[in-house]
Image 1 (cartoon, rainbow, N blue to C red):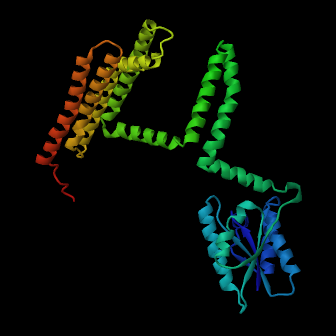
Image 2: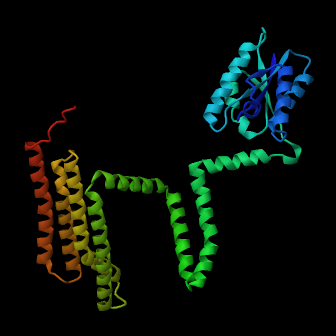
Length: 364
């Protein structure tokens, strides 16, 4: 048996005429088509129902039946599920000893999204899409645009850069009135470039996770929120001091000095290492405090600030020696102090962890 199956995914038939679905039989489908055409002559599903009747009348060499199944309005998953249930109802009503095959009739790409649901219940011999000739592919284009707008990933990839580009002209007009055209174009170009760079590197998820962690930290009383802000400020100050030291050293070196790059690097380290070390210590102390407050403290976490100070001592000694500010004795002392600080802290906290182990979780 061939089943001509008309699909109305958003249930225009039921909502506009009040008819119960599924509708089975030629006479019932014709009455439903007339009722829907009377209620809304512009509804494209009217064409689907009449096309189903047309196909039914054109088949005379095999046993056939025509039926209409509907979904629901507004929820694709619920609509697909309801269509599947109504297909099961139609198949149960058919009284035939032959295998049933379906010829699906739809009015566009949206209704055709339910094809896999129908195929899971009955073999499909073909799909007939019915559209008004004057509006060929109009609904398919609308459905495609709708899918793009509903997909978060596609929306972020296409619409955000397009929106930024559309903002360039009004921002330039505003900047021109404020006599700042170059600065505004640079800001807009920089923001667009930053966005494309983040998308290209796939770093937008990491940014989203960082923002989510920061938001959670505000409401859970995490000390790291404060210490990370302080550490960031110290890093900025350190970078400025390092750049100033590079300029100072650059004025004292001959322009043809082949080691100028190395001297500049040493000057950058010498001018910024103390600030960077302070930032590392502050950030690590905040992390240790949070771990202790949330009952996940381990003694080895206390190594972090000492490791930071150890590395800072070594870098400060090496950079000072390379710039000629200190002699070899100072370098040797800095290397020794840095090494001992790291080794001693590791041993001390390893012993503390062995002698004062963390208490087992009572719920474990």
